[in-house]
Amino acid sequence: MPKDQRSFYRIDVMMPCSYRILSEEEAEKSPLPNTPDAQYIEEYFMQNLAQLDEQIDEVISHINQKSSLLAIALTAMNSKINFILHTIDDIQLTRAIPQKLVNLSGGGIAFTIKESLKASDKIDLLIKPLSNEAPILVRCNIVKTTPLNDGSSRTNVALSYENLTEEDRRKLLYFIQTKEIEAAQQKRNQNH
Image (cartoon, rainbow, N blue to C red; front, side, top):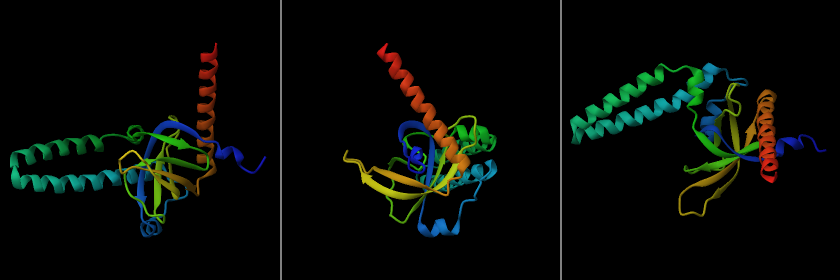
């Protein structure tokens, strides 16, 4: 059996998956730690929310020029959401990772995105295959992009993991094997 052949088994599955696209320069300036702890992952994830918050504030200031009442209401809602976000712990935060349909293996992952990519871009991926384990934060290389022919601007992107730890690979393989066993049991039950 060729080395690590098992890691290339692929399975389509819904799982918590969030991503961030980085240019080659951004990736060089901000390398991921070898073993990111829960606090690093939380801060990294919250950074996306902080950027979104800046965009919301900017839009609200534009709305304020047309309707101060609407701007006041939006500002109040944004403050309430920020308060709630600051009161959740890291376990609740990882539960907030959106579910996404992915094609998963021990060597890479593929899923659909709306953003446009350059071949040199990197993608930081936050996935949580096992509910009772810490999430996995890993930088990925773009292997292939395939535009969808459904009239949308969506693209299927195939990624390979960069420097995935053995512990995280174990989590992925265990998750894949569990899903394969579940599928086999369902098939067996349907045939009886």
